[in-house]
Length: 241
Image 1 (cartoon, rainbow, N blue to C red):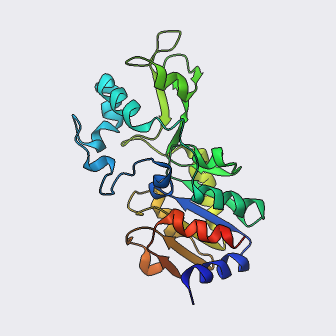
Image 2 (image 1 turned 90 degrees about the vertical axis):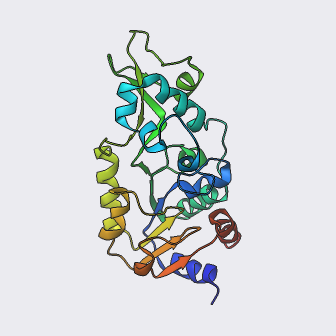
């Protein structure tokens, strides 16, 4: 049986689907991933990408941090692709109960999905470290140098940097959703970043499905693995619903 047809059968059988998305869900919208051949980890920068995106860099080299952040994470004009559209369709027909995403681009929300756990935060929320006033992403990306609040404090993006903990509300919500799922669908994630990838370990439902360009450390646990372009697979699935 064709793998896409097999996945459709699983989707039709299940009524509590939880989706876990990584950077591969957004690459077809034009957003660079991290570990791909043209990913951020392969690009030259003043410091390694892991450091540029660390809390240490944010607090100790703020000019470098914001230059890198603004150059690489401004996706305000980026549009959802067929992956996001398929997930909206799954939610509309009552199958999809939650999306857990490592992505900070906000494209799932832009596509219209209602229940999204952003376990690595989002570019769309930012707050002043001094007075806690909130700012939108447009203010950050349009600012010169280090973005400052009206009170003079530095504004920090609400994204999870290396060295920081995941946001409790979203992570605890994602654990609950995973425990209740009958189908756990991993889309475009290498499943190498913990603790988010550890959700696969706690899933105890009926089907685990992984769709990713390359192999993952969890393929052996999956009921179905599709190594192909994610947006292409989702476009085919969209035709069936």
